[in-house]
Length: 465
Image (cartoon, rainbow, N blue to C red; front, side):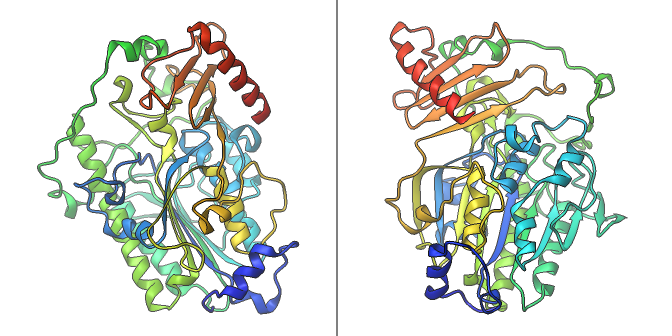
């Protein structure tokens, strides 16, 4: 492989048919897509966290671009990961939740961007958490497959390594890092590669590596103040719903989590363990940087770093909770490094979505998508800080039997407004003025003057759907 140059970039950005010739094969960029689990915005040093020790992850943004307004379209593991891979909303790709039987069948049929890249001559790999159904078998489109059932385990997990189930010994984040590094170092030099590294970290139960136990030893998490005015406009947050035992649910795939191993559950302990767990991810990113530099492939590799959703960490009285339609859950970290196109240290305020990743990577690889996608290419934004972004987004959440407290919802968000409607009757809608109320505290849906805005946002939602 050779360093991508200006002539090639001009080709991929202006090509009308997206066809790749043999001569172009070696000059196409490699792709390294890293996704963490349940990582809310604010855990990275580059995001302004003065406690964080994430120099290698930060480097992606420092030598590339950080998107300050990146969102997922469904704030839940399985749907979000399918949206990253397909460029489509959950209501189109049908991976609608984490517990529906049959998701493993659906996920075998997805027309993902790695699948399309493999057909176009890339060597592809999936390393880590798949989590669309409980099935851990190889999905179409991957030359290298290393995964595990469902959430997997942090400690001594059983993995599916090329079709063989193996009992590992050690820490899963480190094992994923080792497998990713091995693929990178042994990838055929005559072909570009595309690798997805899908971490279990920093998902609950947040078990760190032993060597990081003493890190952040004096860490204290400042609780978020919650007002009555905030919770008064969010009646679902005040509902108390008895939680069933896992075995009492019908027609779902229950995944009782591994043990927390006696670790504390107070807020400082939980967020501290997020930082400790993330440290292992950061170390793996550092190893990949080093290997790419040694192979003289760093600047010919597109590196993307994201999370599958955010979390409420005290906002609105909810701690370590996702699934809701509020910004701390929908917003994610998104860093992209690709020097031939992206100026180091760039910041973008434009609104982008997880469904925009697939069309972006396909365009940069010079491959025309085989089917239309809901996502929009981010290439203009990568090139130009003044390029227009999206004006609005659709987010959606579908019924999960294992999370009965959260009811299905649909939401539209513009730069100023967010409107949330629940798809079951009898549940009041919510409207927030993000310009004057970025914390989504005051629900304006009952104000008479809000009706014109609501009507406009409802029409916008219909258009998305």
